Amino acid sequence: MADDTRVTKGGASADLGHNSGNMTPEEKLATHYHSKKDRVFVRAIQGEYKLQAELDRLRSVPRIRKAKDIPFVDGPQCFSRHYVEPKDGITQTFHFHLEEYAPGASSQQHGHVNEAAFYILDGEGYEIHDGIRYDWKAGDVAIVHNNCVHQHFNASTTKPARAIVIKTKPMYLFLNMLFQKQVKSRSVEHSEYSEGFEVREAEQGENHPEGGY
Image 1 (tube, rainbow, N blue to C red):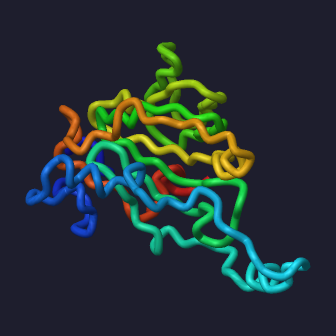
Image 2 (cartoon, rainbow, N blue to C red):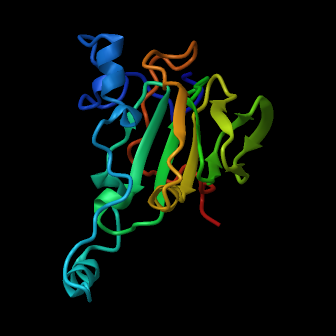
């Protein structure tokens, strides 16, 4: 993997429990985002009828979410940076996150009622939706339609892949469309090709041409 400058030896940062050699696979899986028992899918809103306090609070919260303040979670194959979701007190109807797939990575396999869109920032890979393969590369948008069972794959054995994801899961769950299920959890072990991969925590302009435009 040394032929790609974005892949470095050493593993992810020390605060990511999935890389702890002292943890069992079950303990590693318990640290993953999708294993949380207290995840906030839709936040509560309460107060007087005109909700002035909530309106004042919304107007006071920061409108910029800094990548440096939001570390990636999970791994060692698939990593997520959850930029904004209802628990953050800014939005209520959508969830926006960045996915990074290590070389040769495969994601969890699951299904949910809500739709989702994956804008591919870099790399190349494919989806499996209800048993059908759909290939993608940087610049494409992969659409996850309602109720399909899906999984994401990085087709490269030497380079990572990245996608920005926006989904309306909170709105669907607010409307009581609650069905969602994991078929296969995210792996807590490396793929054949991801050993030594370190997630790109810092934004260093990988998606821009050298020398500018």
